[in-house]
Image 1: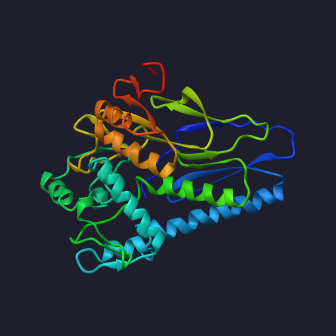
Image 2: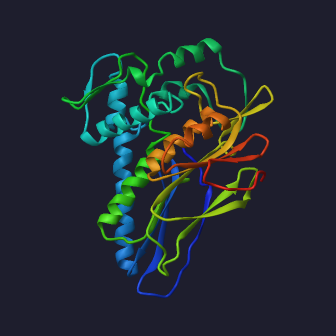
Image 3: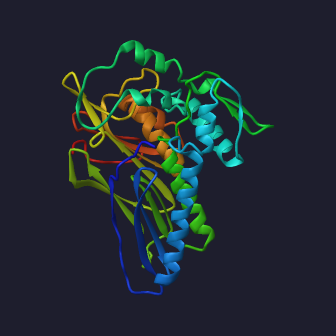
Length: 327
């Protein structure tokens, strides 16, 4: 999975009451996770945090394209050969991902993964890849080509070399699933922070809202805005840790699936949405669409807001969010 780095700090109010805040940090899916729950005592909190961690492990085994035993790897292996019958959970996730790909007109594309091996985003200077190699990899991308069979619960990638990849939606999905699990266990308030893909519900023990801070992409020690969040997801994508330098220009790690090249013009994008899965996919799509097209798109969507920062450090926001214009 392509890790998204943490762009959020949390104000946590620890107040003596019948319940307190408990946290656990760990690395899963190639990314830093932090689970926060409001619980009655340390013992019950530890059990809840362990169950949340186990749920992330389960999801990773399902969607990881790096695990040869995962259903996703089997679908990719059988590209151009035969359909693969998968679990209902993976089938539904792919079906929703195709719908999001269609909604964004391919700015988010679940089949983007065939282009991944060409680029290395480690902050180093690189020689431009062979354009023919890029062109060949882009030819394999296309959510429209993915064939799903509702009756058989099968997925088929019709061209050899096609791949499904959940790097732009998987951690958001994991955050939603862990939130759902913990809510069924009776957790009244908590946060799942999947390396910047954040889903929150309920409140802190004293009844105040959780607070999320958006980090300045040009100075990670500074927060430029704070927002209260409750029963909402917040996802940020940025280019300030995973990038490369090519011909003297800096490029972030988000690939434009239409061109096969890293997207340009945006250095950070934050999306507020009802679910982290949706916010995750849209954050990637907005990076590709750019500021003008991206915000026009967001303003057509109910319950979705966005803040985008361009290469000059200027802030742009959707209709219902007000922020300073520079950082």
